Length: 188
Ligand SMILES: Cc1cc2nc3c(=O)[nH]c(=O)nc-3n(C[C@H](O)[C@H](O)[C@H](O)COP(=O)(O)O)c2cc1C
Image (cartoon, rainbow, N blue to C red; front, side, top):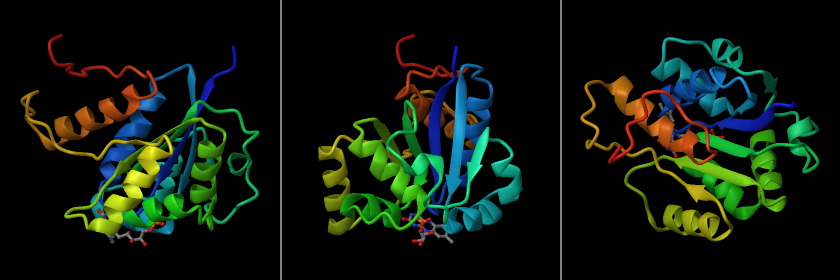
């Protein structure tokens, strides 16, 4: 049976470890195939926030794309996929999607995900937020995007930053019905 495809977009918001944890969790999913595109901003935050290089992160995906290559497969609505997850998602990328300004492959892939009525989940990250951020996020939510800000929760009694990161990623992947190991669900 063909693997289910998910497009992963990484943009330049703080939270590169979230993207890495997401790709590592997806590597364990034998029935899923990852298609990765990242912005220049993401390459920068990966270098600043993790011990990995962008190339090492690209190597975690099944298929990688150049963000300038707006003719790549994921730029088309005909590309078969379950959906797209942008983790982390900067306010610039939020603004780009909200205005339909698809001048990169990442933005175009998000745009076609929306127009084809596929699942688009964004780990929108900025704090504090101003009215333009909030308006853009409302626009996206009203267009069917699932906005999952990577907010810390304490009810699972995290013992480390890694556990906090893992819990957020579990919640993101849960949006696609992807079950991660050691996901502490409330009441279970
Ligand atoms: C270390 C670092 C952390 C950043 N964190 C955020 C953030 O949390 N949210 C945000 O919207 N932008 C953040 N930025 C700014 C974005 O990287 C910048 O606006 C960039 O143009 C976003 O472009 P992109 O969405 O194409 O990656 C950060 C930049 C750096 C260098």
